[in-house]
Amino acid sequence: EFSFRSARRGKKGRGGRGCAEMSLCSDPRFVAAQKLRVKGRNEAAVQMLSDLLMAATQGLSEEDQLAYELAPVYYEYGCALACAARAATDGPDESARKKLKTSVEEAAPEPSEEKKEEAEK
Image (cartoon, rainbow, N blue to C red; front, side):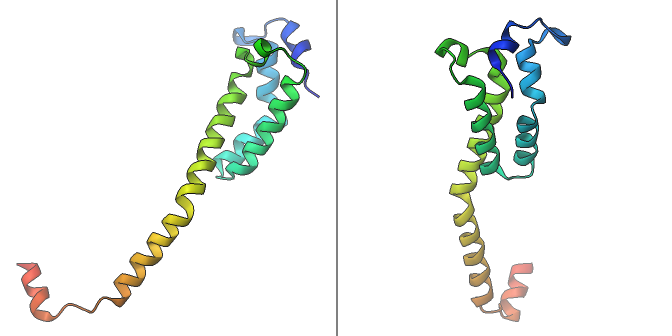
């Protein structure tokens, strides 16, 4: 289990990153949530990142909850939330629009030969 406090007290690792940032980015939940988001499974990614943030910030002061080491998790969480919201608002309307367009095209009478010729001119 990841402990933000112990990682924050740790020494800096490669690339000048703090141990907490490296640990969170390599956490299996973080990696899995990124993969879910890429596959379009945003709601599952939101849940996984929410759980990770809750575990990482449990018992911390407000200042520590906003520490820069948590930025990658907050960023992924925000992206997943935005994508999930977009999918929730666009999803049903888009499919309804496509069905309506298809039904209108199917119901429309075929243009007469004269209209086809006029359109070509």
